[in-house]
Length: 395
Ligand SMILES: *Cc1c(COP(=O)(O)O)cnc(C)c1O
Image (cartoon, rainbow, N blue to C red):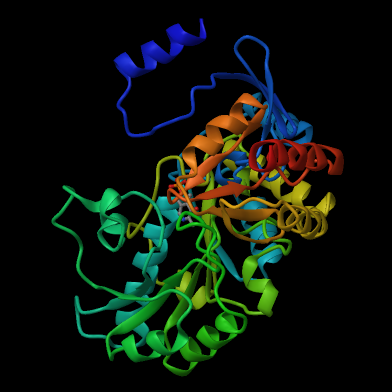
């Protein structure tokens, strides 16, 4: 059965992923069950889309309830969930307006369009000259525009020609950002922690300094919190660690708690006001099913205090990880329940070994194992995880 499904996927699917050979058929909370019945602790959480855990009952109920009423209207007509979603998300972020999309990459694209138009309208940047500063080793999604400003050959090779208008600076270097800002710069797009690059945490004070630089040069600060937001790093947003407010939040993943693709750009009227009717849109963006699911997903993050939980459990896990004695571990780092175990060797064989022991995790950037379980994970489950890591690294 398992083998057949794997063969079938290899035979009929495109091979744009290299998944571990576990075929999941059920899941609940922090645990998944594979064909054959074996259970695994999910330490990837679908790249933090599952902060609320698999099939959270409150989000599940909202999905079913809404699916029984109306699922899609298109934005040609109004629906009774979109206004509530916009209000609740804007208030959660302390912002004025929300533009809903579906996938993370679409939200990033939306933020890029908003920033460029803002640059032309509000900063009088000459037509078609707007520049956006981005960071080396960034990951913002997979569209052609976004991969075009990636520094990762695997993401780019063979997909050109690419969109111009992006300038790259090293991540974590505020002076480099300042030096890269030209007359035509409209925005700085960044991740507060670079996740796909290997859980790279910038130096303390970086977020405050880039805030100050963006303000001084009138450049929009676009925080891609698709993976770091909604509690993952121990605060509601990773920018909160330095009490910094970006001009734009880009959200996705856990915004719908694993049920449905929902993303959004959250900002001021000044920024999102650049869009008039006809200038941007999405057939499924802001649909009532998505909005009902996202509203429930947000309520779970708030009501269950998932950010505080992540801070507490993450600090405990980090201490435990630092206590593992192994010559192959090069570094242990993290914030909240977003932790990275950097190895001196390839991480993939260790992920495969952990899989055998019942731990689902995935290497990121070849040498780092990301450990990012759902934020509803129990302390006992984490203690069990540490035991399995000891088996692999100390055994
Ligand atoms: C996952 C991710 C994206 C892209 O989201 P998709 O839903 O896969 O398009 C963008 N930025 C960051 C930081 C991400 O982690």
